[in-house]
Length: 439
Image (cartoon, rainbow, N blue to C red; front, side, top):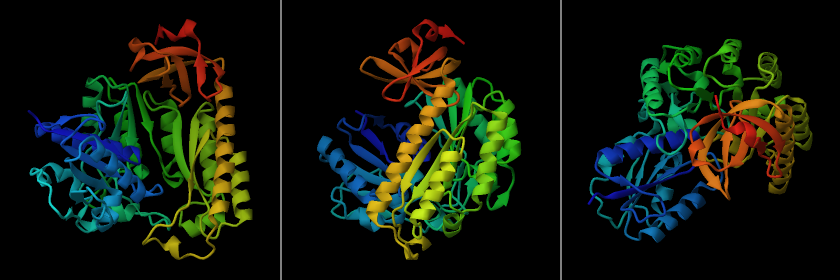
């Protein structure tokens, strides 16, 4: 009987693509993948260092794994594993910790599932994580997260990602197109391009071979994929050429997620961001001029050291005046080995929480206002496999989340629907009379 492996992923879309790739390695080695709640022989936990309480979350997941299978072999990989391997090694029940350079050799490292009294650590200096390993998620969603870039050469003062993932590096356009064609052949309808800093695409072995626009143009020609979505792109790397191409492309959808982090030029300077807010406003205006129905998401950090009440209000007013669709709000939390941790002007936790709450309310207001502009229109929806209480969900190209009565026939299908009304839970109800019309 084959050994069983289960996975748990914390963090970003990039982590999901890499977990899926590691899963395929285990399958090729003769392991059967099972649900996390099933009794597995091996548990792989892919961690994140960006969000709060990495240690607490990791401990909780390890505890849950051993509850399902007390004698299982537990391995921790991911950003947190690269940054704090010793801290993870002290978590009861962890058998192995693998760093960024080692995680894709995981099957070789754990060929022997003998549990040792002491946690085994394989963690090279981050400079050794200098090769690009192709990854994409598969078989677990109606869309695929396709990794096109890894690492980051930026030096934002709050961020540990360069320490956890190394320098910026990319796959070749040829390899990515080949993966996209394989994904299309599998029946997946949507690809989401992921990476740490995908706008910096094109660096291979330290030399620039291509631009992100070159990749976008090449992927737009891949037959069989209906939608391609850009997960997140820095405002200073989102050129007019990219915006203009997406506006007239066959496959790229009208949806951009653009990190802002602060609407105060003073705070942007302290963060070492590579733009001022004028450039950000200019990018939003350029998008909306060519694609009035485009969805624009924004990352913003509250409570950064030195952020006064006035600075926050400056950010709030800036965001309130922008034609954006939703916010991802992050409360600043101190990270070891970052310049920000040494900065004066620490913001009390209660103020950070208050500012976060204000922006969450603003986000809901922005989302509702955007959804209202879409009501009464017909839109193509890709329906998801999830269903709850007799309903299923899907997304339009411009990221309006819709709700319809569950029908298994609709899963992974593109259907034309009429967007009728915003429901109390914030989703958009679609007309049953229209929802079964095939595009």
